[in-house]
Length: 598
Image 1 (cartoon, helix red, strand yellow):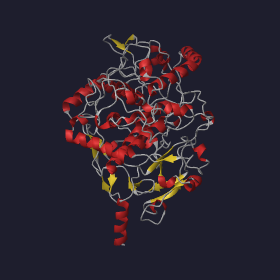
Image 2 (image 1 turned 135 degrees about the horizontal axis):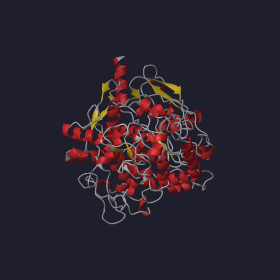
Image 3 (image 1 turned 60 degrees about the vertical axis):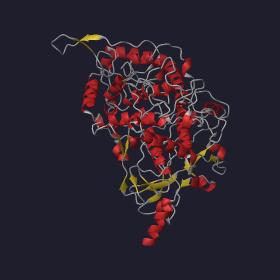
Image 4 (image 1 turned 120 degrees about the horizontal axis):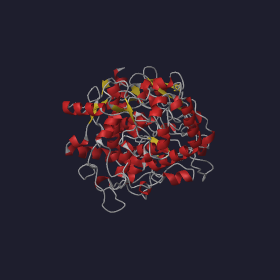
């Protein structure tokens, strides 16, 4: 028995890395694809998924997919991963991985019984030797071929699995490809037909944005730990709120850029290619990006602060305003789009950058380029094209900071998985119970809306309440958050308390938003004029009894609002779609027809 255990331990220690993202090589054979089962038998064990005490092969149960008639022939990501597999390993206890030979986040050891806790730190507080080690770890991930493979075509081209179309890929580029795969538009068939009518993004512009990227960072962090045999590695973050410029776009940190176009990144990352940056060309001809081995691709670029519209990073006040929100997400204003860029008064949408934090309205932001979106655009170049932005290693420091802000908010308001919005408020594939595209083994969106300690990590300057550790910083942050106004609406809309109001509609149409009107505060004896603000109801209040009813005497105004909404809905939909495409890089930012800062 002891000898068998020692042998099994040795075998397990020599296994390939088993991080999630597309499918393991052992499961992309015609036999596995035709049976739609991926339940490998781990080395040293006699049963699929390791057997009793470790794991079992079970049926997957993704939410029922919405009507797929509008999606042409590209159904691969709907009800993920049922197009490819309907049976997979379900692991017991702290075990994880596609064959249950790995540990859950926050645990290590052959029996996954040892805690593994790491702290993500501000890169500016790290020593130069630590920063250099981080860069070397990224380079090592570029040199390691993954145990996973990525699809190079749609499943309908694979002849029901009889003709697998998958490629090898290095560990770093696999994560680039996974981000592209989740964010790409749905491909229309027949090939060459692209009417631009189908927007499906499983990782952005909806409630899954923050939870998907949290899981994505955890998977990347674990991959780097394993490639470099360093269980203590944690992704650093760049705190860009209020920063005067990109302090880490230097030779000492993440590389500076060439002063002349196309502004290639110099230094250790100078040879890195911009994988899938030509995804629009692939989409237009009905294919999936498959240029992982193409040395003729352009190099990654960066040109921070060069855009005349977005030459500043998000302000500190924008951060405080974001943290003042109490709802994770809200019903989108324009529910016909497969994105939630018009969810007002929403922490997620304000942090993602489609709602206004700089002017502190919480309403739809012109061009959708604030907060984290603004950082992508400020850095320009590779980071400005969201689908393929992880090609620039700056991506990980940026999104680690986004996750840090999310963690501050979760702790401040004691948020848990129950705060994830219901299905009727989410885009396709972003429901709480939806499996995240394209992660395998499967993970659900809603599972990651909880404190980071559950997943074995924390941040260096965040206390148990989500506040700075420094007493001085804590006082400044609390005072700044307390003075924030919330979402400022017109008196009519504040009285009606409708989900769909004139201010949001005018903002969507890029008209001048209504300003808050000064109203007499009849509840106070001092006679001071105050701004009337609208405290958006919580998700529970919104959906507890269906649609809310306007108070008596306001029905006629409600009818006017509804008529206006119906009359303009088509135009709003088109406008919202254009804004979303522009943010994603389908239209270069430099083509925006305004000289005003957002």
